Length: 161
Image (cartoon, rainbow, N blue to C red; front, side, top):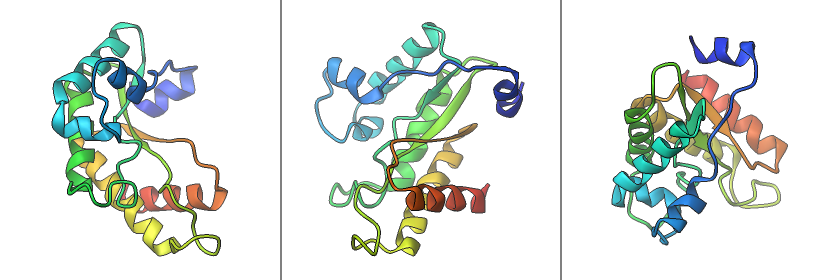
């Protein structure tokens, strides 16, 4: 069954917060997305537990994985998102799904902030490309407070899918 068919057939049960679980398990470094590179077995175990508990899907551990939130960490956004998707995919049972988690850029967009819409488009595209390379079934956009920003994220993802 495809993700679209599963969504049309009723309610899907998702996982819980990755960051909270990773912190409880000892990964205290933030952003928690860094665990995809530094503690992949811990991330894998978290996803496995969510599937074992009955989740129909898990979100990748990539909520903060964008250029603006990870600036200065010396990591490749493409690689951290790809690894996040690959880790979740590695424990995903048949008939279940992996959704690529994408959060807001973390700073206000112009005219209230310094981030121009084309810069936001570029960072959402880069994040989504990594998630696609890692094998996600779809995307989960969460915790956006700016309607304009989520429209930019949706358009960026749609432009490459």
